[in-house]
Image 1 (cartoon, one colour):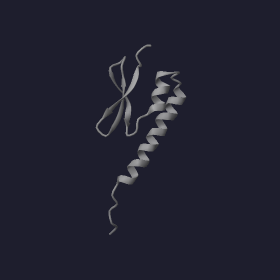
Image 2 (tube, helix red, strand yellow):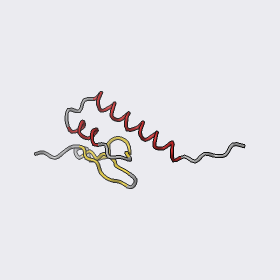
Image 3 (tube, helix red, strand yellow):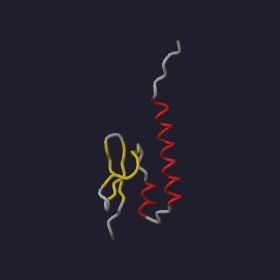
Image 4 (tube, helix red, strand yellow):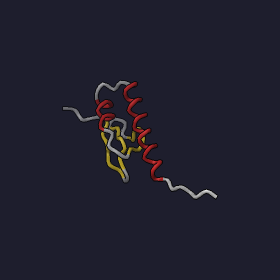
Amino acid sequence: MSRRRYVARGVPGGYRIWDNHGRRWWGDFYELCPDDLLTELNGRADRTRITALMNRYRAQKRQAGRGLRERRPRR
């Protein structure tokens, strides 16, 4: 069995995707492990599916960030 090209590596606060062939980080920072994105990257690598998965993870990140912001009282 060959070595997987893309793997998720834990970094402080979440995960990043590491490209073993290019030896560099790929994509964004993820708070949750992007298992289905890794499966697609290491499998068929369909561009439309990868784009849809990345958009989904970005939307999750935006939603999570909304709850963490503090609201300032109105004057």
